[in-house]
Image (cartoon, rainbow, N blue to C red; front, top):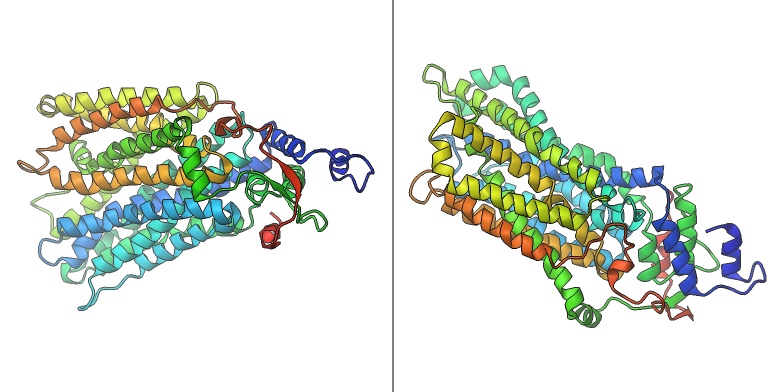
Length: 551
């Protein structure tokens, strides 16, 4: 918005008749939606993406750390019990579930900016807590780790709705899908980085691991603490930028109802990356729909809106059943391709342990590069051209076929060496089409299809539904996989995955295509009469104190 337009809007400075608040709002939204890609957009992606990088690193680093913990804290067998292993692996998922719901609601109630950075602080504290967790006669190391991983999970949960909504509300409509996918793709790099750090740390402690007595395996204890502890470094680097990122203009307009401040912000930070308080006009409020429980029920009780929330929630639930269930069984795949546990009879226990830890790290690198990371960038390349809905439908359909082949053909594939190679290929393809498919789009679509006053809440509900699917996969399938013998039930689990992928096809049909549409078009609300009045004064100016920083 130009200076002349701003003066006309304010009227008092220029003597012209002020344009209506509704027109001013539409002009500001148009400026956001049609803006050219700038350094500000890139910075928003980087700041949000570093958080997802940290999330993925912290989640996936536990896989090798759990093996090390079993070595150190179990003198007999050197392996955690099934319940202990499950506890430290599922604790973050439970925390994430609650964090997604809580932070999703808070971001709509008190502001995206006010909450952004708090969730990263929680992740940093939870990560450091794990790295220095102690073991004593009165408290088990597993209990302490479960507590800290639950706390870390709360922070990770908050990152989902906040990063998604902040990115979508800052993005221009033509590049919104690519910006959100770029943020989410940082998960793949976080997974990859955890494997790289693991192999570097294990290699650095090679001599100590192979020579220290098992009864005092200090080097292994140091390894897992170092691997996990390093996860807070990228989060600490990004913290300042998260705390100083501006409030989104859509929140300022539609929830704070401060249209003049938002109009000023749009013109300022899209060009300079800064924002300032307007000391004259920042107390004026427009009349528009407010987010209340009654209004929430009214909005989503309409089928046209309720089906969208159900579609995003169920699609994410179905996807995470397989996404986390597949990751839970990666050890079987690693064993198949020769990167499983070392069992050389001529080597010492310590030497076998070193090879096992190295194998796990290298195997995870292969799996990440072979399917996870490439899938994100196929989505990135096509999401704003092909569309979200076609990519999600294609992904669910192909995953249904892949899991049918892996499940119903499991015995035949495992019976020959070439069949085992084919099984690994299908595993990598499943990873690929999860990310070039619903794993990416289930993150993007909920950040676009809800009104501003419920956008973060809707994304939080959808993400929490997905995390519920992850908990079902981690807890339920870990109990089922050994029915009838070690890994004997795996083929039936893969068949169950196929069923859930098929349900994802039908839930996707409930969703609208969001490509090239504005967030206001997707809210299904009358924008012509959205703003009713601009002369309502607030009872408190506390909400206006938001704009106090410079990026």
